[in-house]
Image (cartoon, rainbow, N blue to C red):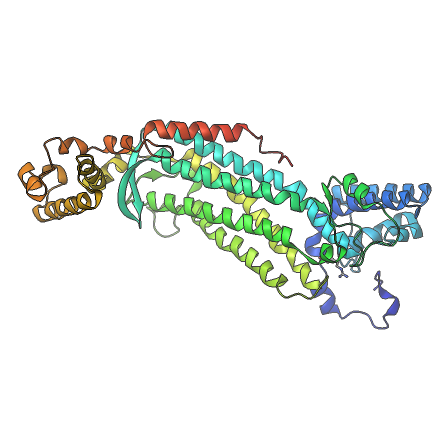
Length: 465
Ligand code: ARG
């Protein structure tokens, strides 16, 4: 087998080892960015006087043809193609002859792969940001439509206080907004060009790295050749972003799985996002959301994989780093599937306000009753205690708070008056929470306006620098 590095070898690589070691099976998807990197590098070599204009031109034309073969799916792999870099160079050599061998002057696959992945991320991430934005749009649209629907809110999964269903939807809007911002924040560090770092020590041919970076659409260059080939922190940031986002989506999925159960019945998933059982004819399972929930494990696993691979590696490049690509590809592919599914589920979800209403019980208004006493001058701690006694009384009498006679209330605290019963109202409860970020109608509408503003402030399909 002919390799790029065979000069000092007397024995061919072991077959099994060769297959174990080859990365072409997955780095082939970097073909186009790899070729773009090579074209820019050839221009840089020409500017540095390493290639003549004619040689540079031959290389450009050859690389264009290789790119066209990949695009048309006519590129044929050879068993000697160890990785995408060697595959491209091997084919270039077949097309233009020995001048192809000048392209790798001063370059290493170490700076090449680091460049490829960064270029690939610069291309892929905006599409994911746009998918994320589409989900936020769906949440905002539903929040607007369902503004008058009330439901029990939970802490510890115990009924806590009444909420607007819209308020719950917008909770996810803002969690996803921070995810979109996190992605944005990570970009400047992706957009640093490592090309010219060589194997680890730098480039000996006087190439203009800044011009090269600009040519490739990077914002600037990396400043140290050693870390340029050794670190993968920009990939870790993307994987961490994906894992955090996956966690948010899994919580959204879990809320809806729970609420679509017959015991809750707060929502019904559109049939198209559910499946049946092969044995139980009555079943309609929320598989779409269960899988979204499950994918969070995978996204977290990918982050942990690369954190573990990179810890304790000796400087600088080590082949362990080749393990960065599969988790990265997997996380981004996973999100590209998960995000549109969640958007579809949210957009087609049927809300069942009667079931939410039926799940409201007066216990959810105990805080309002304590607030009532507080407004009548009782310190909150005492008010809390008094209402706790009222709740106990309601349990003992087996009646809701609104059915306990006034005398009983007044025996607990003389601060209770006849108007206490007007407080025991779900609408009044949500409307009372009207400061910024609360669940009153006005506060939720204000929140929606803020949500619309952040959606309008960027298009989502291109991430500004
Ligand atoms: N396939 C390698 C990777 O993914 C790139 C080549 C690294 N250089 C080397 N000498 N093996 O990281």
